[in-house]
Length: 318
Length: 252
Figure 1 (cartoon, one colour):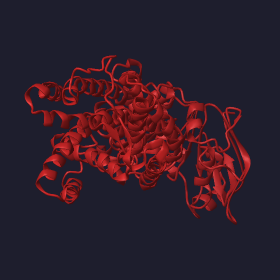
Figure 2 (cartoon, chains in turn green, brown):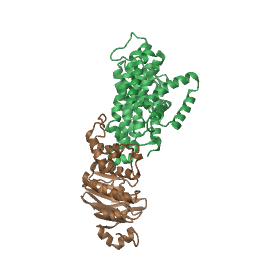
Figure 3 (cartoon, chains in turn purple, yellow):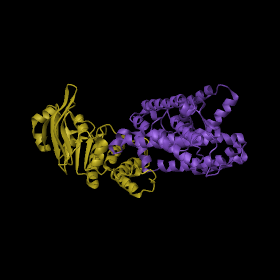
């Protein structure tokens, strides 16, 4: 049932560039970048019970790393960009995570938020390095050594880049699937459910939380690097706290209790935002109402509504 | 001696919760710690399990100083514990709960890409432990959906899955019906033999259970050891019975 649904969804995503108008094909690009990011975020949220309100920090690190490489270092290889983005995110996450994972619940959330804002202020104020509020251009990267110069920007994004991003999403999902179904994934769930008990079983809670934090940051770094080329520019709004809020919103919307929930959440969010923005100017107002409705009526998110059992809210845990 | 505590003192501000407690547990022993409320049992358990560091004195486990080393390190050294208030993983199944303990014991917790489902060793060991505790049929049930007695058994079963040398049980039968108490104790004793647990230390209020199962009883009173003797000797000491168990109480 689930594998059939996933196969159907994958087939549909593969078919999009052939059947859908270019506008919709381009909308899928941020969906895929967010999908990767949320796979990582949910390792923290759904599996480890830690809600990060600062994950746009790592999205920003990945995006700025990509922009630096393409614009300043003239390195165009997207494979190299993704590796550097992942490594940069991990390097930033190592000390940040080591501090944050000592705390849980709202304190963890607030600390991640604080670090996110530190980074935001850094990219905003260090104009010479980061271009300030204008940001840095992120020119078209080369895919497997090909720059596709013969294609217009739209054709490049809706064609090769689209499938490249999809391939990265699929690989990221397969890797994450293995992680959550590994002994490590089980240990994370014990920590989410009852850290005191987990410790008496010899599971070092802080250490595991830190690992989960690093992995989720790497995913966000990769997602951030893929977010840059479609807009051709990265700027500080990528790292602003409302962007972190959007990531949490997408996860809640799709359902943090299931593996594919957040990916569905990203998809629904992107299309809903696009539609609401075209209808009313106050899209944030509408989104606020939707978020409230989801939390109250469907705490398990969209996938939680069809799943057999509803996951309880993580905030009630010790 | 598998566990040895010497001169343990613990102050909370000006309050002295433990005032020079020494005890030892040898392999093959079942030792019960008893005492009225406020005698220092909880403090003692927390110090023995490495949760709290003593203000003075030392705890040696398998000839190693383990003062305040914390539960993770102690679990790895071979000491497991259960809690007075049952501790479970609400959203994990019985099988997953025990698997987690087995994974931890085998040091596979950080295997990121190993498939848990295909790990026969972990699965078979977990199932074996579940069977010992009569939870085999309920292995796919979520922990939070189990009846209270089974939750208690699951808490203890996951501790046994660590194959510890010593297990510390904090009121293993509290909150359980009288009928279930004996079942739990019988299961515990049988499981220790199967798993190879060398010694059991329990804190227990139910004197029937204490006197039926213990090789030795340590009676605490006002932070000191009042008596440390075999059940028959404790029973014969009217002063201890009056102080610790209650004036005029009789133990059958």
